[in-house]
Length: 161
Image (tube, rainbow, N blue to C red; front, top):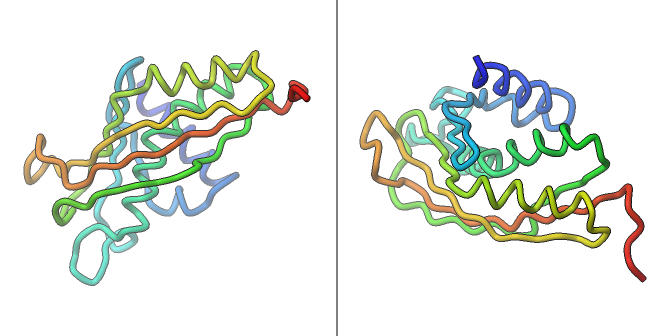
């Protein structure tokens, strides 16, 4: 039930803020304090001309696997905390020719950045990693690895001069 509620939250956020996210139909598979798994189905919306997942859909999944827990923490804090990704690096290891699970095992670091931003008026940044698998082909072999730098700033606090 928790995963279903969070999936609805992500899709509502996508509808209101980033419609392209909603277009990919993301679903939460697992959500704990340490691990977040997001699924993007391979469909006519997300596949390329080779019947594997399109580069843009892979990027959306990678981003969401890190930012979805951050958005939830920001919403809970009721503070004006903005986030953006400073950089994005990915290695595409195999064709993603099935539904893709994007896995971030650094959720405690994501939450630590948000918690630091609650009291720090300056921009807070942290580089985080994740990977993607196609469970129907091989649930342990990554088809993609990625690294993003999450950058957050609390707009409700005045920056130091």
